[in-house]
Length: 228
Ligand SMILES: [Zn+2]
Image (cartoon, rainbow, N blue to C red):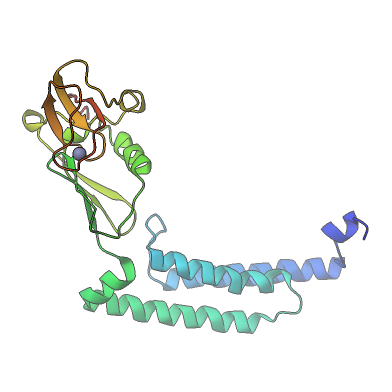
């Protein structure tokens, strides 16, 4: 077999076919716009898992007729209408049945309570700590003790509720450089935060096991206030 540039880029594309692709693309694009308007969503900043699934399904249905001359446009139109009706039905159901909503979109998840990470041992929820730390830094949070409650919403966004300045507790620092200074052996007595769960302990022995989560990696706790 020989590598053929013409085959790679053009195959049997001629001018007539190119014009047809332009027309097909325009029609499908208008269909997508109409579809998105009809879903009733205002924007796509917050997509639930369910909506992402719809978009993936839609992508294939509308993408193929754009470039593939063997594919008629009407079947794609049927697919779009079907998905739209299904979407409307499901959103109608989720608005009425809370259990249905939980099934489809998941539940908001407590991540921080009272300046500590909620222990997720008996739950099947997973979230990436690094990603969550980055999210916290974008909110100007320097350590976990500034946060009274953090909730991971089903949209993937995190809602933060803060302590008032006078109530800020010593907490686990989340700035990368400080966090990297974590240690298993304590050389200087003081307040340390558990890197796994955020529990703060006064430690004056070389080794100390976290009474809350049984890890033993510590980093010096800080008590800075939040700059807004
Ligand atoms: Zn711990």
